[in-house]
Image (tube, rainbow, N blue to C red; front, top):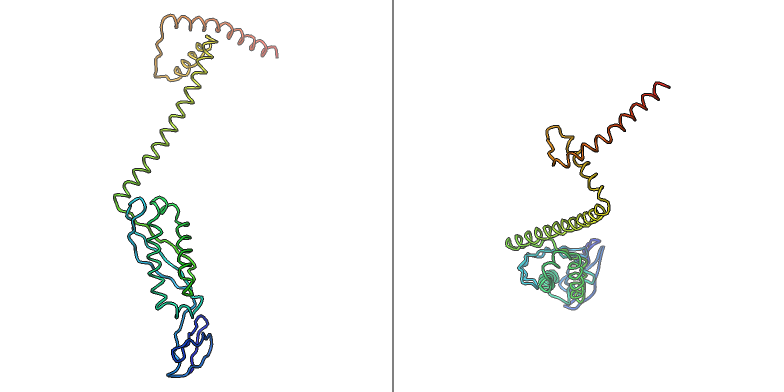
Length: 248
């Protein structure tokens, strides 16, 4: 009997019940009623692992689904070493997924996705090697959490953000207090500096036309005296400037 085998296919031939060989691709001949053929696809096959409910190491129930990618490397072993290599690979992927994630905590499952995928791929590839199967990749598609756990994680994240904001605010207060202590020490050494600072503050307040500044009598007298002291100097400076301008 004539068979046409595609490029990505191989045919395992049994003659009178015994393994005869692997043929393909191309055109092959078999003897009817004596030879039995089993066709194998050599391309990469994708297994959609059903959703699995798993209890993590810290007793959190999660629902996980994944994809497994495998390829037949030895058609003879895939047929003679296991009854149904497709079903066996799918069941092995499910049990391995449960075993690996059951030994991890929830934070590790959520944050170390690439590491989990690599561990699953190595374990599956090791266990399917006697069947002539090579597992090329494992990808966890989704990890679902209960609603109560989602709310708990949201509260934890909010508490962490509040903690960071309080720490930043406390650090700012500490720096401000240090600067104020240094300024107080400087004002203590130079008393007139605090007075100049007060006058500067009053000057800034006076820029607002709708505000009235009220001070004590003594302080007002000091301000008037200072203004009178600086007034003649300003007038003299103006007269000198006008005189110089007229001479030019």
